[in-house]
Amino acid sequence: MGDLEHLTIPYKSLEFREVNGFGVSLLSGNTKDGNSLLVTVVDEKDAGRCFTLEVRAGEDPHQVFLHPFAYRAVHQPSEDTKRVYDEVAARMAAIDQEEAATSILEWEYHKRLAEAALKLSEAA
Image 1 (tube, rainbow, N blue to C red):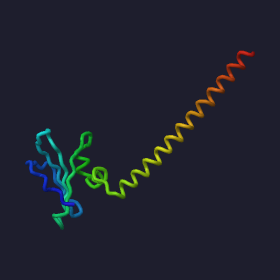
Image 2 (cartoon, one colour):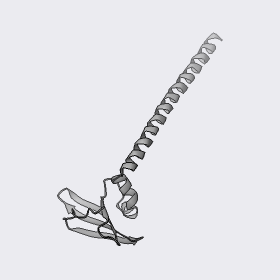
Image 3 (cartoon, rainbow, N blue to C red):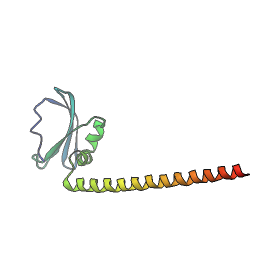
């Protein structure tokens, strides 16, 4: 869980909070690729237990700061989490295929109704 060793660039603390025995920091630093925002979480009882998240493009830095464990599940999923994601993705794909098939059948049904109505109107 300890991965703060790579913080060699000077980072400035933008926000800090303590919650349930964890210190959470939002940090800003300049890298060769531009500005970088990080959220670090340190277990105050065991400073060796920590993790860092890079705020990704499109993410709200304050939300990552407020919910680092939720973002960690997305950024650094465990093998169990990956397995669950894969199962959910497979189920969603199956549902999408069923919905697509249902839509095609409904479209065919309505097309046939329209054709039958046209034939009836032509016959009248």
